[in-house]
View 1 (tube, helix red, strand yellow):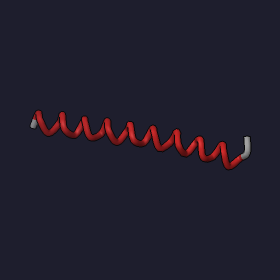
View 2 (cartoon, rainbow, N blue to C red):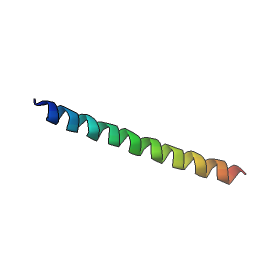
View 3 (cartoon, rainbow, N blue to C red):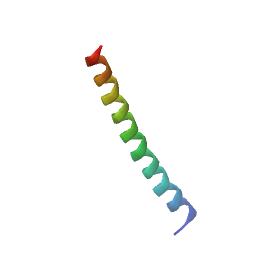
View 4 (cartoon, rainbow, N blue to C red):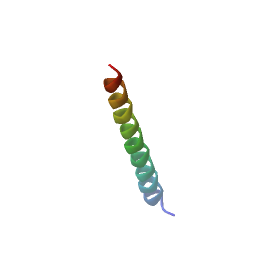
Length: 36
């Protein structure tokens, strides 16, 4: 594979992880708000 392909694959993976983290933070925030 070319370096560019590897980088694009890694970027996709990072974006997916970031989306999951954002979703988790949103869920945590909602849970905290509901308890308050």
